[in-house]
Amino acid sequence: MARLTLDRLTMRFRTRRGEIVTALQNISFEIKDREFAVLVGTSGCGKSTALRLVAGLLRPSDGRVLLDGRAVSGPGAERGMVFQSYTLFPWLTVQQNVEFGPRLKRIPAADRARAARHYIDQVGLRGFERVYPKELSGGMMQRVAIARALANDPEVLLMDEPFGALDAQTRSLMGELLLRVWGEASKTVLFVTHDIEEALFLGDRVFVMTARPGRIREEIQVPLPRPRTVDMLTSDVFVGLKRQVMSLIREEALRMLDARRGDEEE
Image (cartoon, rainbow, N blue to C red; front, side):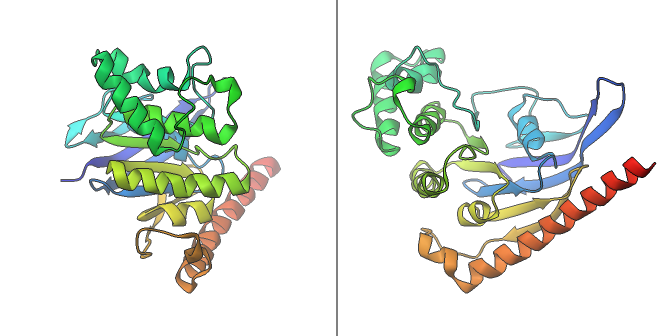
């Protein structure tokens, strides 16, 4: 059985002017246990909306999300979320931020402290346990956010462009760090990004979305072996996959521009 199933998901919004906008249309795919799946597409294609539906932060207009065969009806501790913004509590230290979820679950203090130290160490922040978020760089804050999500022991990790605000070099290093932590934690991941190279470097499978309304245009298997290394970014296989995804997304971007021009002419 698939760990996560998106079954004919459709999402419509009503604008302030009363118009109905379809953000997602009939999206269906499955993610296996411990698989790293990535959604990629043009800006506004609905990939973040899809992630929020899986998180239970939004309810679909049609279709359903299943976790281990059970329908998702709202947020739950079995799904951990990491956002692009640094959603840390500024009044809590690194250790206290990472312990936050286990504390809500009433995990004994010694156990949650031990789990927090483990994940802080995994993300390379040993020695920063008593530091506050304002004293950390952007990359360090995202490490804390990842550690906090993992400390809650979710079955699925949902990541919405978590490295989007970082510079290119830090982003690359964070990708390598995430793969190492994911390999050790053995979690199922659904990751959203607009960065093609990042999508292919991280994912087992990459789902390329159409322009709005968002649908799955292409499912791409990434045959690169694991563990992944930065040397693979220049391999013939990687370059070929990148060219393929770039072409698909460019076609969707052009289609979106043509549609806008048509609306303006009307």
